[in-house]
Image (cartoon, rainbow, N blue to C red):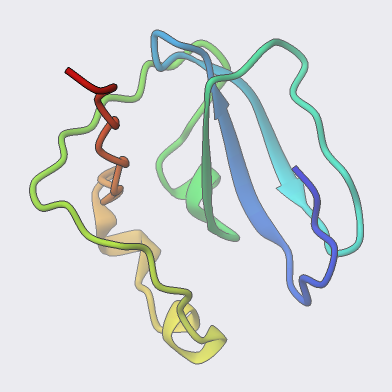
Length: 103
């Protein structure tokens, strides 16, 4: 991933195809990051999420799509209001619906 034009750091979790954490980073603005191992999924979260959920390499992270939504960038003021400590290790994610090829 690249952090060009980003103005604040984020926590990044890299997951393989079985949703196992293969690398963790505190990504800083204006840098490029690659995982130690091949990754299929990337979770970008506010700084502090990795510590709050006690994420480690080898952890398996699972999720369910409850409602499909388009991603909309959040203003920094909204992100800073997130209470990570009350998340109880739960992160809400939206996974894109796979496109089916023609019949």
